[in-house]
Length: 341
Ligand SMILES: N[C@@H](CCC[C@H](N)C(=O)O)C(=O)O
Picture 1 (cartoon, protein in one colour):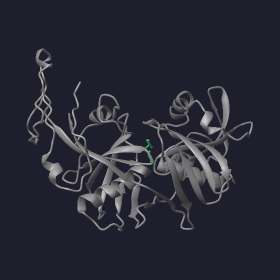
Picture 2 (tube, protein in one colour; picture 1 turned 60 degrees about the vertical axis):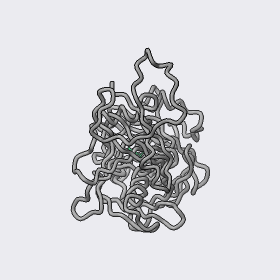
Picture 3 (cartoon, protein in one colour; picture 1 turned 90 degrees about the vertical axis):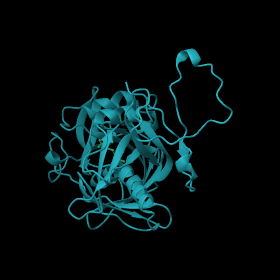
């Protein structure tokens, strides 16, 4: 099992942080009580130096969007991710690793795009897209480029071209593209109920019938506002850890699914909790929030412009006349570090 000792340094403006890297040494147990010198020596690791048999060091930047947190990797020099899905699982572990909902790779552009983005969930699976993640990636590449505060990026993803824009107010607005409603393309085996889409269709989970609407934002989402009794959900009282995996792995979702549980506050304000495919209960899901507004409109519950309250904070979502869904929210750098693989 690879060990991870990482240098935690808050994002400092000065360059002095580049040299002040703590050096971690494996101290044989017999000498564990050795008194450390008053002032720890700080040395920079050469990337080739092994440490306790660990061979590789991975530079990463930890970002979060409403508490949905990711390790961003500067992968601009390669068309292949720098680490494997298995290494990503270990890195995402919140006890034995750095801790994150996923690892995102900023990679060279494809077909004329500025960059391309790939992501591994914390279970090592690779989703097509990540809404909070692409806001973090836009902030990450702007920091790498020392770019102006306000600019857009064309980013190629497995869900197509996605366009995040850094705004003067510090928020990031993203053109998330058009929702995909045709049942086989979500994908779901549920029978469509409205023009090829699955809208307010009963789905039996754990012996209960839930009314679900299925939307893809490049990745699959199952949105529910109520059980078959039609009563509004009390989303903060749902046993997500129990029912989340049952939705995620339900046989009607051949690619698994993200599941959003929604309480309508008003026609322009909803409360959401989410069980994510490959990541479990997260504090926020951007693609999920987009799918929720689309589902709310299709079910006649919400307007096309909504505030979606998530445990990590609010996202502003708008399904515009061009059929694209726009998401606006924050993306913040937390720290930079080095992981030993
Ligand atoms: N949290 C992300 C979604 C990440 C991918 C998702 N777990 C999936 O597997 O589809 C977001 O903000 O969209």
